[in-house]
Length: 256
Ligand code: NDP
Ligand code: 8X3
Image 1 (cartoon, rainbow, N blue to C red):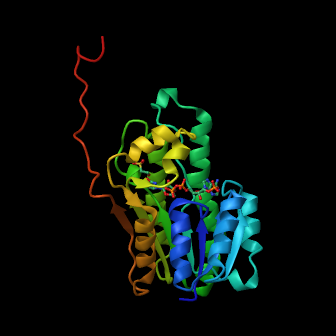
Image 2 (image 1 turned 180 degrees about the vertical axis):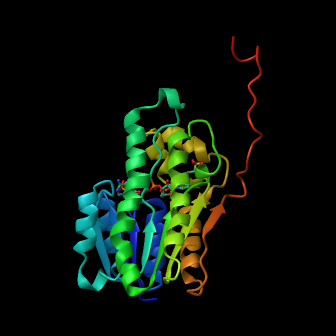
Image 3 (image 1 turned 45 degrees about the vertical axis):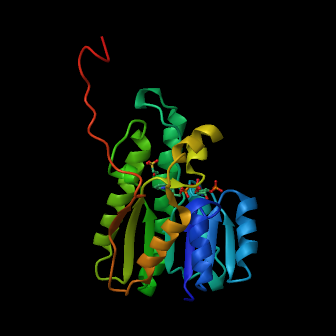
């Protein structure tokens, strides 16, 4: 395909699967994440297929994002596709019991990190009149659940920001897509439960969740459509996941 694709959160999960898929199609890759070891291992794995530029980057650091974008080698500078994927959920406690540091980290990563990457890469796309930003939202952005509080809020932001970008970009050949997956088996739950492997495994036990490869395939599909076709927002779940009824508090049964 010969496009340059910038993927955040490329050291694991959806990001790594996107990297593998885009590499197999011959796209050049800029792969960003904080953890050097898995990122460089992925670089080594994919270097046989395509040109890869790894960037050790914490997307929460605005200056680092700017320097990473401005310092891209010439071969990687004309980024055509940005997959804004870096993100996390921390904890599942009710709002009145959460750790404020967890809330800060989710807002700083899922919202502000995504904004920094967008703001520093978008001007080049507009100047070249060619680009596609794929933002990874979540079903949690549309459907609340106990303990989803700020994580769901950040993902609602991602979807609405994506739609507003489309409004700003009318008349430009720059597409914006928000892809909102449901439960997918990655390192997501290990991160949410802070390394508690047993709790994380329970999320996926006895069912078939989405895989990172499922999501990568959908991301790639949105980028392969004819240039005049923009997928605005797309929600996807495993067939094994659906909604429950609205919860009802019954006086006298569950509280004094
Ligand atoms: P993983 O935990 O497997 O991967 C998350 C990636 O984000 C890692 O590569 C991690 O790399 C990176 N990341 C986290 N924080 C930062 C940061 N501050 N700077 C740079 N990179 C960062 O999870 P998923 O692949 O499942 O998640 C990817 C995205 O998909 C997230 O936005 C998540 O919210 C969303 N999502 C996940 C779902 C799921 O059920 N799995 C469903 C719906 C949406 P590193 O630690 O090396 O920095
Ligand atoms: C991840 C899916 O349901 O754990 O965004 O919030 S969920």
